[in-house]
Amino acid sequence: MGETMILRVAHLYPEVMNIYGDRGNTIAIRHRCKARGVEVEVTGVGVGDPFDPDDFDLILIGGGQDREQQRIAEDLAAKADAIKGAADQGMPGLAVCGGFQLFGQRYIDHDGSVIPGAGIFDVETRHPGPRADRCIGDIVIITEFGEIAGFENHGGRTYLEPGQEALGTVVRGRGNNAEDGSEGAIYQNFFGTYLHGSLLPKNPRLADELILRALRRKYGQAVELPPLDDAVESAAHDSAVAAAERRSAPTVTRWNGFAGRLRRR
Ligand code: GLN
Image (cartoon, rainbow, N blue to C red; front, side, top):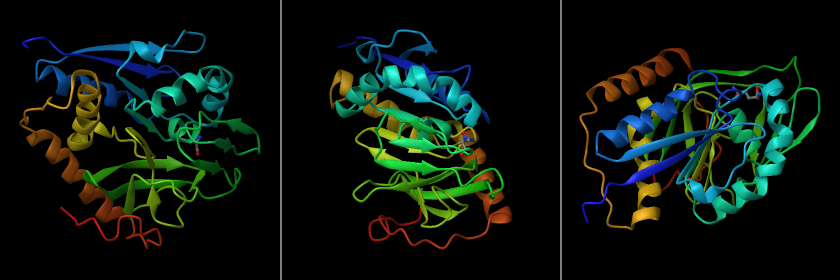
């Protein structure tokens, strides 16, 4: 062995889909790989750029408002088959907020325009209109990767189709639709979520989950990630949880996908 591992990251629409620090997800991936001697190549893939999933090991996309989503809609439609095909083949990825909405089946935006999605997640998102309440605030969810904390700000409400797994269950905050307590979605190795923050810097376990899935897919199941000193990351996480406990109401959860198999850390 002794071969240096390389993680090739496609950062989709980095100039357009980047609010509330979503770019930090790329920085966290880079940092946590470098600390383990794993090389990282991040390629921004924008509107009009070619995209061949075989050139990449991990896909990241951040959030954007309806206007930004409209700006990338046509290009995304052209790339959708490639993105969906890669996810079907186990490509790991993370799609946040507006990116999550567009990786579902469709997003019906604030003025009723339908933006077709890449269809990775079997979800539909509907914006109830410009006068409706937005889902804004600190949010904590419980997932199979532990407790995850972040910040959400979205008008769109996302509904999971039967059989579509959520990423987690909301403990504080609104989540997918402020109704059923579900948050995000998982399809194979691809995660969708409403959590900005940035998300990965303060949720290192989720960052490592993505890195590990990507490296194992490329280099084999024997790949392990040595633990890092996460004192700073843990402090950021704990402070985000504390903010949510102070500022966001406890969530009544009707979605019970995880109820039996999850326990609080
Ligand atoms: N435009 C979407 C909404 O408001 C997503 C916003 C976001 O990415 N923060 O629902």
